[in-house]
Structure formats: structure tokens, C-alpha cells
Length: 376
Image (cartoon, helix red, strand yellow):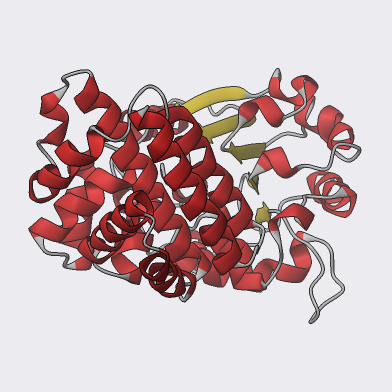
């Protein structure tokens, strides 16, 4: 990855480049983002730039010996750690066991989400951690000489997954690292990191991507049509991982119309129609089911804004505005919070490999109940 490959985040790119060129590289940094903000790709672009032998004022050269090894994320002074768990194919419970698969997944897309990573290696979310074996390996590697470059760089992705009893092992090496050792921790939730470690990191907050940034990236990098890119950028809520997921799984209109028809069936309690919709939704993969539910949350949020006369909120959703105006009359202060909570709960269940038909059947009848409550 190069800085030019990262969507938006120009202020952070400039800050990191200036720090390198002015010899002000912090030895321990925390990249905090909501999912899909580009922190993982930025960490690798930054690591490449630090060790590049002929960097420019804007990016790495791409052709030196160091850059060529970064092309495959296989530089001997780049050490990567991430959540892992045993599978039926391996008993390994550390990052080293999965490093080839991780490189493969990231090189396919540096906007890889955590759930995509779990799917890639066939593990369930609740079991994945960065464990004591990984922490011991970090300490070991930090105490040996660099192989080729001036700096040894550790990238710890999803640092909130550090095992509670393992995290304290890193405290001393993070606080007092050896010369030319750099730690880049990446997290979606800084509050889950131990305070003793968090207090020793330079904090860099990645803002959500703008709709126009997501739209332009889909058009320019993936050949997406302007209409489809506009709808996806609206639904993605600043998360490019989600935007890619929607683009790769289906056209966003398909998900919208299915959600609209499902809601109408739930409202009228047309049981046969409800179960027809459930069969179709349950046939989707886990990522597409989650995208479907996240669209529902976005629509509910739009209804709330309409109820408070925030009409401008529809400017990116023109084709669906008729449904939103009607739906907003059925979703109000009496039922909007429990309905949103149930959708979020369903996303959590899907994330944990719950049976899709059971999840959506339960949700369908709860939604009908919420509609009744909203009309009383």
C-alpha cells in the first residue's frame, strides 16, 4: 500500500509524512477509526514510507529493495499481529500461524473488515484474540536487531482484541522500546485497550469518510456507475468496508426493495409473504444479511430525521423518498428505539453465526408488534 491508495484522510497523510521527514516519528502510535476508515492500509503505507530508501515528499518510491518487499507485506522488519483462533485445519493460536492468509486478505483489500477476516479463516468472532503467545513473540522480536532496514515496525491490528492477561506483557516494551522500534496499534474501540497501554500511545483519530469520497472511489477505482455509487455512499455511513461489501454482493437497489417489501408484509402481518422474504434473506451470506440490516438502520434514522422535518436528509436518496415519507409515519418516538435495538441485536446474532431464518422470523414478528405500538 501507498499513501495514494488510501481514500481521503489527507490531513493524517500529511501529518505522518511530515513526522518522517522531520525525524519526529513517535515510537508508539494508536490509529483509532470506525470500521472502514482506512487505518490498516494507512499503517502499511506509513511503514513502507518510513523504510523506503528513496521516498519523495508525497509517497514511497515503489522500486527500492524495501518497497519491493512491502509489495507483498513480506519485509523482514515488518511484524504483523492480529486476532486469531484455532480452526479444524490448524491448532495454531497465534498470528504467525495465519500470516500468509492475512497477507492474502489484506492484499486483496486493505479495507478488510473484522468479520471478513473471520470468514476468510473460518473462525467465530467470540473466540478470536491476540493472545499471550503473540505478546511473547512481540517481545522477542523487539529485542533482536533489525534485519535490513533502519526501523523495525510492529503493526497490531484490532488491538482491542489483546487478551486481558497478555496485554500487560507489552507495557515495558511499549513504554521503553529499543532504538528504531515503532509500534502502530489499530483499533475500532480505544476504550477497550488497557489504560496503562493507552496512556503511552500517540493518538491519531481517523474520521469517517465523506459520502463524496466513497462515491468517487467506487467510480474511479471499481468502475461503479454514478447512480449505484451514490446510493452505496449514502448507505455506507462513512465505512468503505461496508461500501465495498455492498458493491461486491449486489446492487444496493436490490437490498432496498427487499427491505421495503419485507416491512410492508410485517406491517400487514401477511405471514406467507413474510416467510417468502425470510427465505430469500436467509439465503444470503452473512455479510449480505448484515448489509441488509444496516440499511434498515439507515432508513430508520432517515425516518427520525423526517419526523423532525429534516427534509434535506433525503437529497441523496431521491428514488426511495416516497417510501421513506410513508414509512416515517409508521416509525415514531413510540417505537423507533426498540425497533433500532432489535435490528442491532439481529446484526449481533448474525455475526455469531445464528440461524438466519430464526433471526429474521423473530425480528419480523417483533417489528409487527412495534408497528402496532407506534399507531396506538
